[in-house]
Amino acid sequence: MRFGHGGLVGFGYRPEAGADSWQDHRDAGRCPAGGVFARLIYWLRLNIAYNYINGLRKHSNAPSWLLRMARIERRLADPLHHRAARTPRAALFQARDHHAEPGALPPGLLAAMRDEVMQQHLYHDPTIPGWTYRGLVEAAPYSELHMLPHALFASDLFLEICTSPTVMTFCREVIGPRAAVSWGQAWIANPGYLESPKWKWHRNNDEPFNAVQVLVPLGDVLGEEDGPMLVLPGSAQWSACLEPRLYGEDEVEAMTSRHPPHALLGRMGDVAFFKGFALHRLTPVLRRQAMLAILVSIGPALGSPTIMRRPLSAVPGHLRERIAQNEGFFRRLVC
Image (tube, rainbow, N blue to C red; front, side):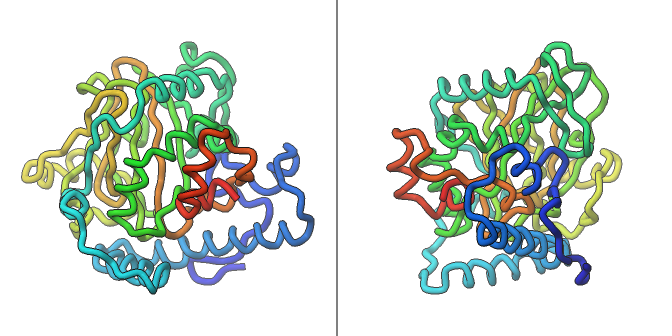
């Protein structure tokens, strides 16, 4: 059933390739007990997210529309909250579309996360339905290998990275106190293979209205050989290249000559924040690299309801207090 760009979806709906539906979770034994009531809540959350993105968010890519809807969403999400003046770094982020925080995470934690990503032995590509790769990363003739979403969200290391006070504080400064982790991706970039679509300039047109992308390199990104993300500063406010498609270098040449792209470089432990609606692209690597991207938003991402939330009692003990103190930030990961 369709309502404009939205509609109703059922228990077999997958928000992207590799992301499990309710039926997939049930078949794998991951669904919590709860019977009909749990199924109804899941179905409602799924359809709210689906229509929020497809019925509202994709209505227009015009910056004026997005800014207006983002402002309305913040007021509706927390009507009693008196919005404080933006901090200097949040104001700079709004103007430049990116921000970096050096030394935000322990390198040892990220090294362990990298090992976990590299040792999955089963990967997928979120743009290719039904495709998986099973085997060693070193033998894979593919430019990108993505960790399966259900494995990522079940990772204690992923959850610990999300509890970083630096990450939580900055996201709240930018989009307000109702900020929450909504989705995530972890992937390996391999050198020397076919071109990836992500190497083309694009905007993320299916993100929530108030959203911040948190980019966590699982290794040093010090130069072009490490495949850094490139962002066109200020482009989230531009009216050019608004169509949800990939753009070649020739199409953005005039813009990049006036506004040189900024490469998100840093050492392992540094964290970069950027707006997904700004024009950006990944670059090919010359040496294998692993990356983690976390979407933080007020409204749900398209795949948020498909995350099998775990009880707080199932969270590692050293993380429980921080998560309990910031339960709103983890409301889509922990119940």
